[in-house]
Amino acid sequence: QETALCAAPAFKYTGEPGTAHERSFIAIKPDGVQRQLVGEVISRFEKKGYKLVAMKMIWPTKEMAANHYADLSKKPFFSGLVDYFSSGPIVAMVWEGPEVILTGRKMLGATNPNSSEPGSLRGDYCIRVGRNLIHGSDGGESAQHEIGMWFTEEECSAWPRTLDAWIVA
Ligand code: ADP
Image (tube, rainbow, N blue to C red; front, side, top):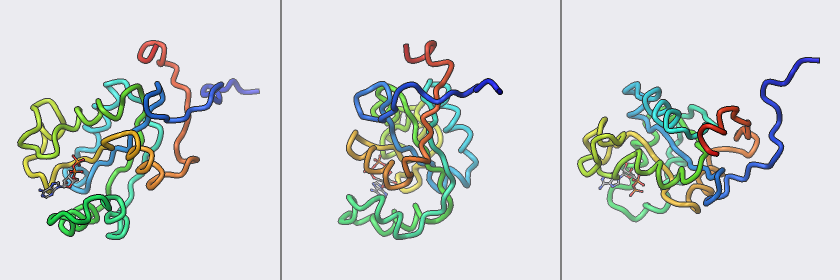
């Protein structure tokens, strides 16, 4: 019998905000994909120590984009935002780790790239608020809602990471 290199976890991952298994929905928007910044984004989250638990490339329909940004439907930029978010494939991801929601937002930078600190993704790689590269959940409730909107439970892999003792002890 083969030795399992990636044994099934002995505990249930919940993704519950506030726990060591907190999860955030992070999406590289169509401009990030077009500009070949997918590797850069993934690399930053990986190097930070967060664990990638789900990922797929998907070209959102206008309906999907409108659902994702439903909270902003009254904003004057809403239709432009829906057009932007559905203008090409995005890379949708779920990242896991303690305080990944809040710290992930810091790694993204402010909504307006001109207010984003250098060193953040938006601070380093974009200029316009309407082409700001990346989405990240802004709280526990929205993280759970967005993960459920883009992924099934089966698509989120609760894989045990052998490096965990060096990162999340
Ligand atoms: P964030 O993405 O940082 O959570 P919001 O939820 O406020 O920010 O807005 C969602 C997205 O809508 C932004 O990331 C940006 O792409 C777009 N957006 C926000 N404000 C504007 C604006 N004034 N003009 C055009 N697009 C905007």
